[in-house]
Length: 163
Image 1 (cartoon, rainbow, N blue to C red):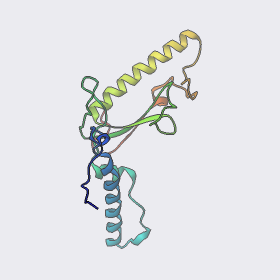
Image 2: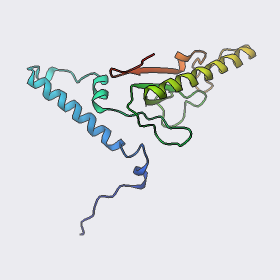
Image 3: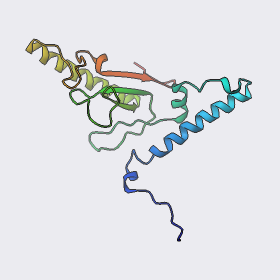
Image 4: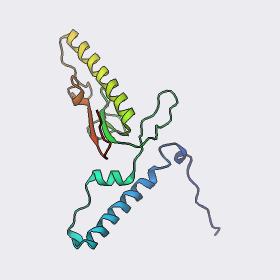
């Protein structure tokens, strides 16, 4: 039997796939570090795992938004997690159970996406009012008349969500 070297599959060479396997390892390391810190402080095993915001901040996530002109991932330090409803297509693979696309975003990409989603929702609301209906996602029936119904943001870190 010959010894085989580890080779990465071609699917792992993309900009997003290269860091995916390490995310779980980093999350596990952060949780283990928090447990060790709890033991040193005398809390024992009863201390809860740190809040998700603390874990995310410790991982130093990057912006996962793809640039339209190049198709490359932005890569700037992320400040927020955005959930964007896939209006009229929320039953596709790769979305959350609610039909949302979940992205980590930097401040610049967050501002751009918020502006684009507000324009999209406004146009959808205007078209629905012309037809005498309320704007809804045709796939799930979720109301889409307001930005907050299709776009939610959860900030983390000290520079999160500056106006």
